Amino acid sequence: MTEANGTGPRPASRVRVTLPDALRRLFPGSERAVWLDARTVDEALDALDARWQGMRDRLCDSRPAIRRHIRIFVNGDDATLATRLAPEADILVMTAMSGG
Amino acid sequence: MSEGLVDPMSQRTLLLLGTKKGAFILDSDGARAAWSLRGPFCETWPINHVVADPATGTLYGGGGNEWFGPAVWKSTDLGRSWTHSSRGLAYAAGETPIKSVWTVAVGRDALYAGVEPAGLFRSTDGGESWEHVSALTEHPTRKDWQPGGGGLILHHIVTDPTDPQKIWVAISTAGVFFSADGGASWAPRNRGTRQDYAPEGQRYPEIGQCVHALVMAPGMPGRLYQQNHCGMYRSEDGGENWESIEAGLPSTFGFPAAVHPRDPDTLYLLPLNGDTAGRYVPDAKLAVWRTRDRGTKWQALRRGLPQCNAYVGALRQAMATDRRDPAGVYVGTSTGQLYASADEGETWQSIAEHLPPILSVEALLADD
Image (cartoon, rainbow over all chains, first blue to last red; front, side, top):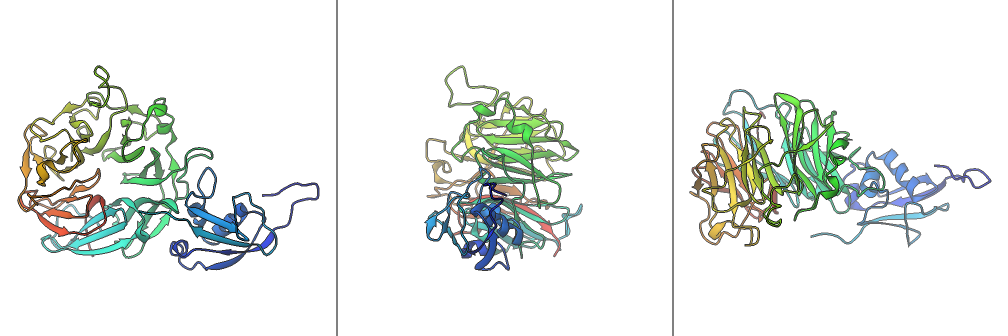
């Protein structure tokens, strides 16, 4: 996914993603924290999927959007798929309040 | 690891349960007197339906999790380990996303999954990936499909064992649809089924009926039975026409239906007291009702089932038979009890209780 802005595509940032335990249980061998190269949250999910096939589907639906009961924070702020990532961004994936 | 043509007592009997909090498996032997419980599996996701491919013993569990969305789980070792996939199990961008898988069916040439919002998916690689059978949701009546109490769900898939091109699906509340060409085109199959919740004069529409269960008689691909929100029905022509078989039953309302493994005239139902009366068994006395003459006469089977203060019901996919002789019959309640009969329904015993709400029951005979 490239972004033409007159100066060429922005290089991917090295970012850190922290995954919730409930997600990790679905992907044996997955790690709690992982460093990835991504320019947006959307790209970070693709990078997660490349490591652990199917993980994107667990976090993102087909609208496409982050699933209703999943929250993703970038440096503490609520994010969407389009949220851009600065170098060293800290991405926290959480399961939101839900249940019954 | 398969259901053989014979019925060796050495084969294990497995009951596959989908529940609101994971899949469970009950194990027994040929006698089916003692059972042991395993689970919960599938990370305690709500699992609407667990089925087995009788040819391979592979288990498939369809469900959906509020956090992580829909998936079909798979086990190739009779439940000891599970994987999951939803690759391709998605509508086009911009459409309402799939919330959950409601049913899985093993066809002769493919695996099928029914989902919410109602739609049909097919897998030809054992559930690793899925493709949308889009002609169903492209049917011109789609705009008029309405969600029932459980949502707009495709909850039963019936395939013709003699002709894999023939597929029937049941949708709440759109009714039964049929394809004779492997899913390339579809037509409603609701003629003769009633819709009591419509005004007088509009109670037999082309679509909109609230079907609850759809099953095929063994050895007779043209004979279907249907438990509907409004009545019980039999078709002798693949669903072209339906005839009421509810006379003699205590109500017109119920959810599950199960056919006998060999006798096309025998059907099991679990009538409830009515859709506005609490939806538990009549008089709070649990009974499975059986016909042996394709719905002409009905008999209540109560021996061993609670006959006092049983405010219970069973949902759409929560009754099953096994292939033994005599056939086992099983019913799981929405309050977590599992009742079993090893003699075609004559006598019953409780084989599990305190489970999460049971959403589906299927039986499998398997080698160790």
